Length: 130
Image (cartoon, rainbow, N blue to C red):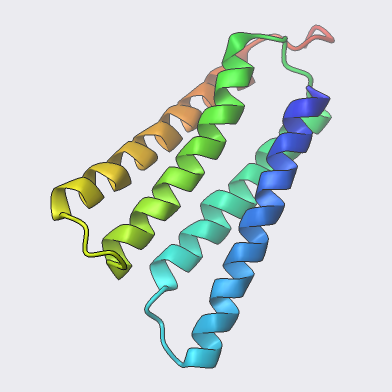
């Protein structure tokens, strides 16, 4: 589970850097256009992935496909949700509304699956028998 912790920690660091950059951009520009995306990048991307990295460091869930699915759905869902929000709220490329909405919903749904998998993990036995 050390690998799961490290992967989540690295992605949380990338989200923290991106969120801080967007925050400094908003402050410099005097605009709150990115506020929703900024908040979700920091809460979902940085804080949640960091908390899950700590979980895998402290606890050792049994090596199952559930743990692996959790980690990768967390990363894909965090990227999908925040990128979908960016496309939805900022509209940088003029993409069709339906496409943008589907991208946003699919990212959020994958992230929701990740939260459900995490809940299941917390009720499973760990390798040390707890």
